[in-house]
Image 1 (cartoon, rainbow, N blue to C red):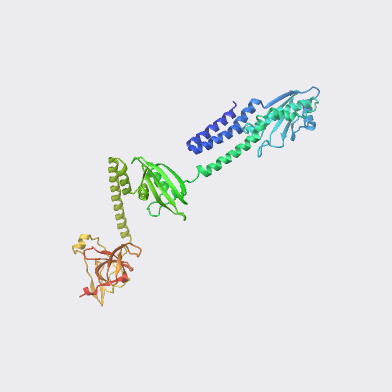
Image 2: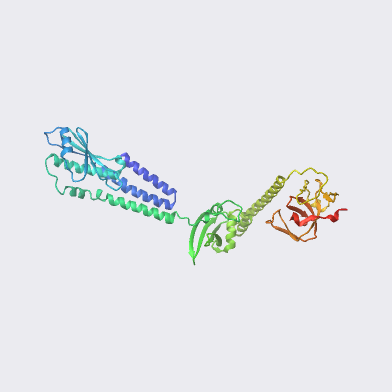
Length: 463
């Protein structure tokens, strides 16, 4: 087989390899491409090579080669529409005006007269690479050789000449158009099926979503696939509700799992049900399975202790405790860093002035809870010009709550509630930012943030 045929086979093999690497859906699609390539290229190319692309006819004597070429241009008629182009004094190109198939390329036959021998040769724009057109040109070269033999010998072309030629090629060229159209329709059908079934997001968008109540940028799909293996999505409808199912395996725990999501009408979704090793675990089990995928140590420990071997469960519990310790250390470090960054250089102490709602107070000494309880804090302040002056070195000052209020965990109304205090309660102030004051009792059992206007200096302590 000539080199062009081997190139076609190599391309088909490469397409098939790509299909194998892409999974079953990709393999089926690539097999279809190979089938279309075989019928449109390889099969037609082999037929053309086997049939032949050059044909010769011995011409009657009495004319020169140039005269025969000119006679063909001037007087030769053919049942099909052709354009006669003189290439040289002894060669002519007979080009067919209509391509073999829609959107295809027109082909032709090159006629050469040399030493009284007429030769017809298939001629196509892309040579042998366009196998279907190449086969049509090969058949045309054979037909024109016979027609020119009639013409050279002064015999009228039989009326059924073209019918006999088509009948001779009915198993090949006569079916080219049908094969092309069928292949095009088949490819379009496969693409449509692929788009509707194989390439559809069976998670209905859940795998690309992020959970609002999880401190992670990972999508649901990425989190699940990072913890479980062989994950597969599916969906179904039941009683008007859309459900999405994720099935996978946790090799480390020797556990098969299944999580079911339900999608609401507004597009939001929630955890609906779960199965572990075939046993129904409900929504609670689904929460644990998803939380474990996001790295929650407690959930992983619970799953490992229930389904994994003893050593794996012990290792998971140790890892979870270590991760929690590291998390707490990181949180404490971040809190200290945040406090350090919020420090503002205090104004110079003038020794006088009233403590108003926009004066700032500072505590530059990191005392421990024990030091608070032991009374080692410096509650220094003094009275001057009908006002209380709190020196920069003071660690706290007496305050009295003037409104019932729930102390907050941070200086914000949206922060968590800590403890309830009532009007008249006496505490100590330790920090102030102009809007909020951090207060606590003497031994630091009660502490939190209170709005500036909800407390005032305890004048009863001034002698």
